[in-house]
Amino acid sequence: MGIKKVAVLGSGLMGNGLCQVFAKDPGTEVVLRSRSMKDDPLAGIRKNLDQLVEHGAMAGADAEASLGRISFTDDMEAALKGADLVVECVPEDMQIKQDLFAGIEPLVREDTILATNTSVMSITQIASKTQKKDRVVGTHFWNPPYLIPLVEVVKGEGTSMEVVDKTYDYLKKIGKKPVKCMKDVQGFVANRLQHALWREALYMVEAGIADAATVDEALRYGPGLRWPHLGVLENVDMIGTDLSLSIQRGVLPYLADGHEPSALLEQLVADGKLGFKTGEGYQKWTPEEADARNKALRAYLIRVTKDLA
Image 1 (cartoon, rainbow, N blue to C red):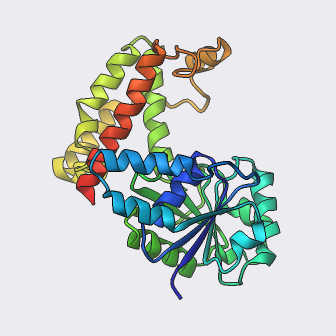
Image 2: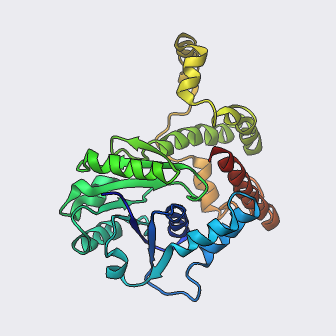
Image 3: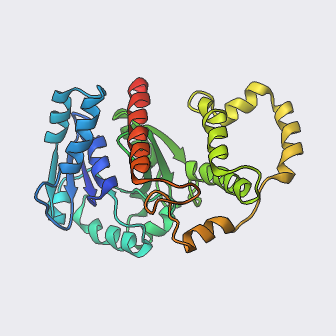
């Protein structure tokens, strides 16, 4: 049996975005469950849809149809009734996630898939209080989920391949770009790659090799420009594994290999320099600049994902 009804638990930014993702599929009924009822519970989703329509990435009629496939409730049993897939978007707290899955398990069918949207936490540990660990799977969507195509489908130690495959196939069907992470490792696939890059970038600023703006410009107009079309390992094959090996032998001894957070990053946080939200982090930002960068990012993502569709 296919996935026809999805229950999303948690109505924050990720929960709203996920409802939008699932409701885009005409064959999916979506229920958003929140502990507190709001005057306009779908306002955030409507705002996102309006932005897509404004940029020509979605027809107005399709946006209205998507919105019509989403219902909202504060009743857990009502949200879960008949659900084929449940996706939790609750805070990144292990006990909260464990208790949530253990609590909802008796309220769903035995074949209902229980998915966690954690970005780094162990799927195996999250499933530890459930009876049927084979149906607990990781589905790590990237923010904003209605614009970023990637979803990491993560296999916990007890997750069955049938559940991994069914989840992967459904996500592909509704237009996402899922990948399978076959081991329950810290950070899964993309976050491990991202933080390996971040470690080197932060080190270069801390060591005085280049300032933050220079590091970002080097990535933005160099390797980052080709990554959407040329994967890292594809690049290795393109230039030759022999040349890649030679380069690795020359550069790896000089790269950052620390296992602790950047000392400069620790100092920035201690000084209350928290980036956009305080106006200063590695660089200084006015409220207008921060808002403009956020808007520009979403406009860019709408443009490129429209081309991918």
